[in-house]
Length: 368
Image (cartoon, rainbow, N blue to C red; front, top):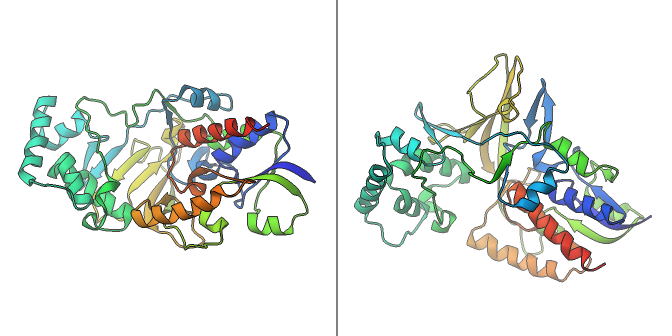
């Protein structure tokens, strides 16, 4: 059988591309090595609660086109992300805003908060930052850094802040207003019924094969594909010719609790280093679910090893240079399109993934 496109990966990038090409009359096959669609946005309904199996996914965008697009496949609720941070038994609001500064120092006005931060930065007398710690201290001062950044960052990266490059943190937004809306985006929410349902609608009437590894499939199939959209790891596609790109990943520890509410919020970060997990997610709050039980997930960042899910590209100088070698190989492939977080070795929020997919769709349509 002949297909116009083989789409490797049933996540957001693949689903958008599949939908658009199908609507153009093209014959499409989608495959995924997992046993489910929706990629890392996958939600599983447990105890009547849509559980974000690969960590919290909160849709937010300032892009009108992207917002109109996703609303064709799902209705969104009005969830606003307002996470909290827990440090040594005390809670702080995120992002860093006037509520946070009041909790830290008892200040009440933007002028007082700015003066406190400026005083701390001046006292540190840091010139050109040599590492992430110095970069963060120069941006926000000692109190914000030590209370809300240092421990969390060291757990996230598995390295001391003094051993991380300064460019990882180019800016740390300080919001001198009482505003706990983390993303502060024009559009924000969670698809009612979960992301899996939304992607199901995207893939409606499209042929999908799950539990299907691309490399085994392409070797064994007799089908013909005019083009391949590849959203897997770009270094794996080229058989690790130049070596392996590095990632961080996350281990999830899920608990079902016989109480209605555990923490009163969907997301609470734990910023002290001594607590091994970075945050606790309470899933029912994403969709305001009423249920007699609740489900929480503790997130433990760990070093990536083969067989794990690759979550966060490590975009340091070494890996960026390595990726560029694979990118040059990819540019020579006229029948292969690389996309998504793994295909482009870049961390994308969901809206950016969809935006990039729609951009690629427009390019492809221009060739018809």
